[in-house]
Length: 137
Image (tube, rainbow, N blue to C red; front, side, top):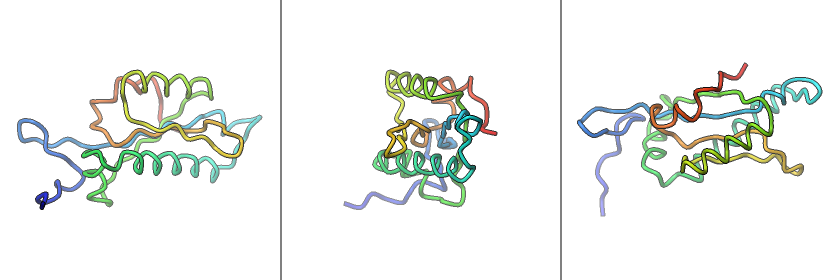
């Protein structure tokens, strides 16, 4: 059966007729960029790309993900920094406990957690889980 027209450009209708901006948050380990690990910039960017792509794929059936992908030119991503592996694992546990859809990216073959990405969400729905984190530098 036809589903009707797609949602408008990267947004979904909200109750009351407004629209809400969808954002995909990516959280990358800051310690990977510093000594002694000192990963190259390209490797860090790849980790963020892997996590973001995996989250979009895993949650592709969610209406917010579908709406986010409708207008590729207006996708919004925010890349945040977390101190280290323990903090990243802790965040993943809290997100799981709060039923926040995300994926934790494990670099292979070492099975090392490097990054996590949420599926696209309205900013206000997930801000409280990420407010302590700063933009990745």
